[in-house]
Length: 339
Image (cartoon, rainbow, N blue to C red):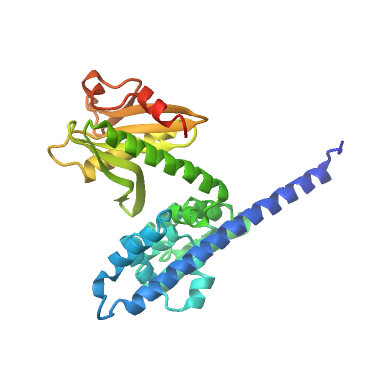
């Protein structure tokens, strides 16, 4: 047995730090490849946008083609392709893109493109962001607080650079949280999980449509843009009899409390952005599967709360007036138990 001592503890900490640094470097490396790819795609769009046969239709056509060719990648929406073109236009120097732009996540870059028009100011924020490992939220806060304009005062009155260490951890975590980076990496483990998710999507879609009780398929990975952020609903249906949109979230593991919050958000977004005046409040279904065990709950809007924000409540059973229109939890369990 190895005797623990201060030297041994130092040794363990050094090994842990080496592992963390290696992990962070790998994440940053993948992010760089993604950003360089986006710049190259944007450059090609920029160079061909005025082609006599293509014109302004090049972006929607390209988006459709790329989504069909790479259905698992979420980064090729029309909105994102326009940002790629802008990225190439704003930063024509590829070396600058390699050395500076690609060190930040795509989300960081979108914030800078949208909020900072002056290229000198933008470059200053880029360098500070890299130097201090700011998360996207910290970057937004610094911009909104006019840090650039206050930089001389801050540099004179702050000792942050001397007293605080600045590891890659925070920036690496923020980069990994970027959905585009996660899709681009395609880890082996995540690929297996996606295979299961695809089977779940296909199975539940076929099952609901075959019920003949009024389900109309709207979309898989249905895109919602809320503010500056992109979100994707696993499955979106419209129930003709109930006159309600049905949001379905699929999870390959056990039910977690945060799934309800996410569904809450999606239901609010669908009701605000998609639901028509004559439609009823949207219905949410969470399907969680692990080792042939499915946990299904229905989330319905509770309109009786005397507060400004609507509240959603997870129910153990479907209200009687909906039982004939929605599948039971037992039906769903039986349908998916072979996956």
